[in-house]
Image (cartoon, rainbow, N blue to C red; front, top):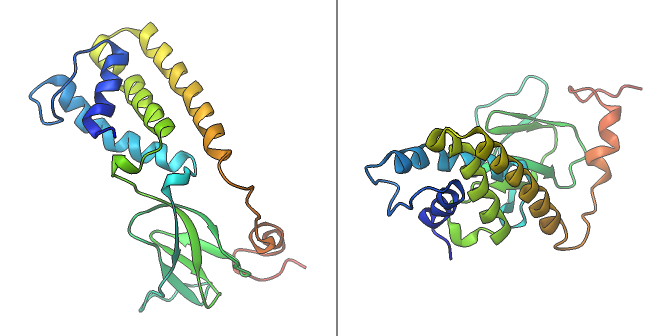
Length: 194
């Protein structure tokens, strides 16, 4: 199992820099990693529906919230980074802040969760994250544009590969017709176009 420090040290190795013992080390490297780690982790999680980060939830109605164009407001989970799809939803919906507005009487979603436990990370996600961090810190630590560009290209290549590997796990998803087909027949307010 890779720890946060292990992931950061892989990034430092790619840059050609010395390892750290902890993110709280009193070094420029540690301070830089402490600043960038969570931002890069959250960004990478949000960019792709990683299998390890997908969760399902049945949402609770938000009391005291009256949407202008909808009947109900549902509270998104605290760890929700991105809603992937709404399960068997026949009405239009809209995400507003940390809520989903809809006319449906029930709201069930698939979403990307904010996973912080590195034991849950997939190995290809770890490789991507460490390369993303390396490409983001390279110039600050080395002032070497050639190395920075090379690491950015390496990250992009690994990200493409990781998405392919991740997408090959499991059967192809069947999307509800209400999610896509019927959406073209509605305004945001839910009134039919025809």
